[in-house]
Image (cartoon, rainbow, N blue to C red):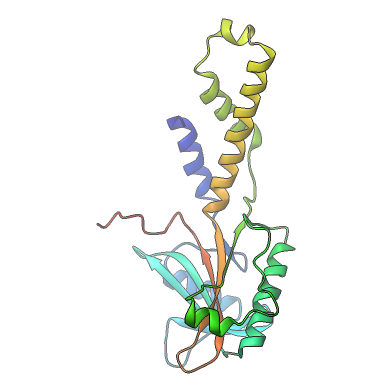
Length: 225
C-alpha cells in the first residue's frame, strides 16, 4: 500500500475503535472508570479499579486494562461462577446473540458447543480452550475516498495507454484486484476491533465467562522491547 493509503487508515482509526456500551475503549484508565461509573457501575469493595454492575442480564466485574497508560481492553467477568451445564448454555447463547447482532461479523460459522460435549473433561484432559471471536464492524467508511486510494495504488503500475488497451481478461483481473484490496481494507479495520470471550474455570470451582473488548490500536506491539 502507498503511504497515502496508510495515512488514511491511521486517520480513520483514531475515530473508529472498539466500543463497550457505546464507550470507546481508549483514553486513560481514570477516564474510562469515570465513564463506566456514569453507566451505573460501582467500585468493588476490595479492588478500587475494578467495577461491578449488570451487563447483558448478569452481575459482572469490569476491568480496564492499559498499555502505556492507554486503555486497550475492557474485560468483563461473571461475578458468580456456575456449573458445567449452565456455562455451556450461556456460552452458546452468547454465540447466538453475537451472530444475530448486525454490529458484528465473524470469520467462523459456528462456535457453539455440542450438547453432549463434556466441557470439564475436554478442558482438563485435552486442554481444550472454548473461545469465540467476533469483530465490531466499522461504523462509517468513506467508500469514495477508499476506492480512490486503492485505485491510485493499483493503477500506478499502468500507463494511460496500457489502461486504454486492456483486454477483457485483463479488465476482469484488475477488477478482481480492486475488490480484493477493498475487502482486505475493510477486514483490516474489523480485525482492529475484536470482541471475544472464553470459558474460564474458577480457582475454587465452577465456570465463568470472560469477555474482552479490545482496541488493537492501543495494544502492545513490541514498542517497549
